[in-house]
Length: 255
Ligand SMILES: NC(=O)c1ccc[n+]([C@@H]2O[C@H](COP(=O)([O-])OP(=O)(O)OC[C@H]3O[C@@H](n4cnc5c(N)ncnc54)[C@H](OP(=O)(O)O)[C@@H]3O)[C@@H](O)[C@H]2O)c1
Image (cartoon, rainbow, N blue to C red; front, side, top):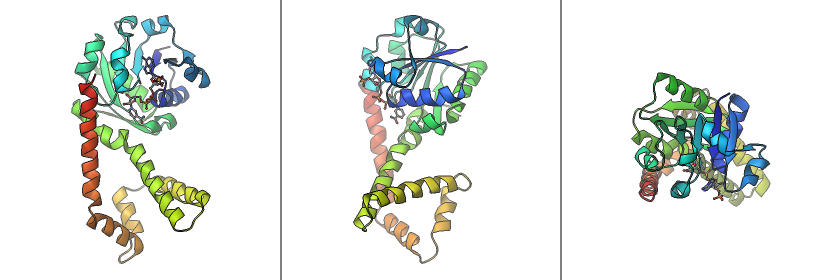
């Protein structure tokens, strides 16, 4: 059985564990500053020999924690290092890990429900290792092998951060529902179910078509969207993503 050690068992480390535990045949262990996090999820703690024998080590700490992560010499030379650290380039990872195979990936939180998007890139895997990585990532949702490293940074803005800003829009919808006179509980149900129902519709149609289906000519939805556009919503959204991109560049400078 192949072995995976998850280093950093916070939100994403646990999301990977939950997603992979349900779907893959990997032996998974975890290493975190707080061992109780792994225990609370029924995940075995990684021992030194697990790191040495691991086929894969998944780095799931914050980018700022990389310089203090003193484990490279404990990991077997043939191990594939998989990093999900936002903005942290392979060139930077190589300062800490001399391993032959380093994979950079950008997952998102829905991997824990096997509904994630994982964009990934590696400089020097061969076809069979590509296949191995694809099989692991496909257990967690849709994986996309990217043709250059810059695309890992770019996909972060869309799928990596996406669940965060989509949830933020849901919060705005809730706040508006409360202002309109609904109770907190009703507002929660209205906003959450609208999101969930829309996501189900979007499985069988695309976003442009769904917008068109809901926006009848001269109707309420059309008025809302046209006003958003006239007020510069699209442009502001694009500018906000650009600011996210600049933040990501700073993360790598500090590593
Ligand atoms: N959150 C997302 O949606 C998302 C999406 C895509 C990619 N990412 C990337 O995923 C990574 C993890 O993000 P996260 O949101 O899961 O962060 P998180 O919840 O803070 O988890 C990081 C974990 O690593 C632990 N840790 C820190 N230093 C360590 C060390 N030296 N040895 C062992 N464990 C250590 C932390 O412990 P302490 O709590 O004690 O510090 C924490 O449990 C980041 O690099 C981020 O860029 C996140």
